Length: 105
Image (cartoon, rainbow, N blue to C red):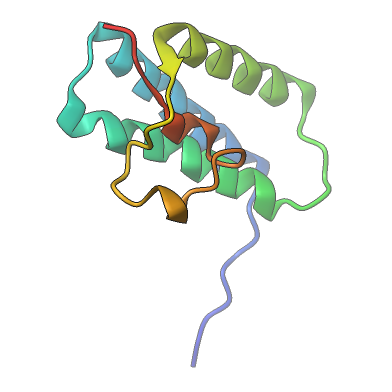
């Protein structure tokens, strides 16, 4: 019998934000291209958690932390036509915008 996945909680989203913020600290130290896709997967996990909450608005504090982290990520990286994954067709550029950014270093 298949178990239902438990609903995403605010704590789950907060944990995902912490992971994304930690990834940004590693990206800021200088690119480790072997780990870069892993670091970005933390943003995808956060994205998925937010989507699973449906139309529920995030608490303002969490929304602000995400906005700050994403802004910092944009400062650390530059936009590219090249996806960090080898199959760009799998990752819609608008939805997975973070997979189309590369470190400035």
